[in-house]
Length: 155
Image 1: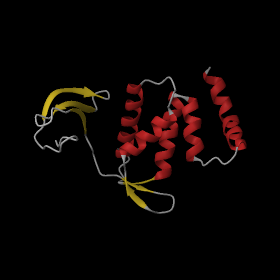
Image 2: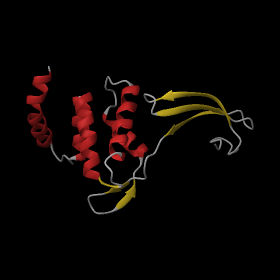
Image 3: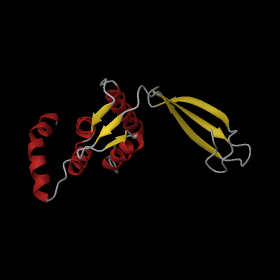
Image 4: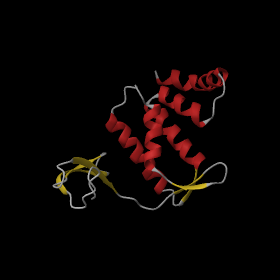
């Protein structure tokens, strides 16, 4: 593994342990050339996924992009980072197990919304506002009013 600080290709693993509910391996690494320490994660990738955007454009699936959008939705919400990582890993496993390598972005969005709805309704509405391209406060009001029976039955 190349050192992100000095580019040295000969780094050493100092510690390895399971992460993300035993779906990944977290490795603490040390660079003998510059003394830098950094962390890497190793995950199983079943297949290369391609996202089909709504305009027909194709791009490689990017787990980091998925993670960023979910973290933004959950920002300042009382959800533990481990729970967030488990959710992201679950979404990726679900996408990989669909049996298709080409996945429409709408499918990914629906799976993310479904997962967020189970964890935090505020994050769910935040994500939906971007995913469904809300343009005005009325869009929020309409969306939340459709949610309200579900929210009331959970409390």
